Image (tube, rainbow, N blue to C red):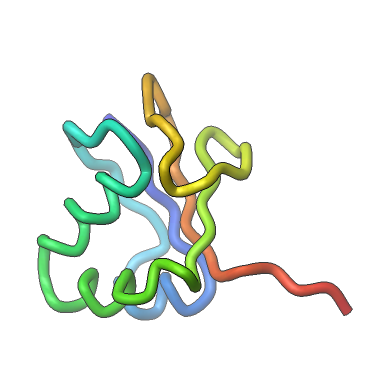
Length: 82
């Protein structure tokens, strides 16, 4: 089981802040494709992957990062300073 966390507008579009799922995804990008296939809300939330950042087990990663035995994957928009 992988615990997914969604932040900011991703949370609003998906309709939940977190969920636990079973996945066969090998990378974060594979996981995104699985999520997009679930329904329209996920497809809309993940429609522009250039506007999405990810963390695996609280470490920022690229979308091609392997999931391995990840326990948590978080998705959020790019962070800005200010």
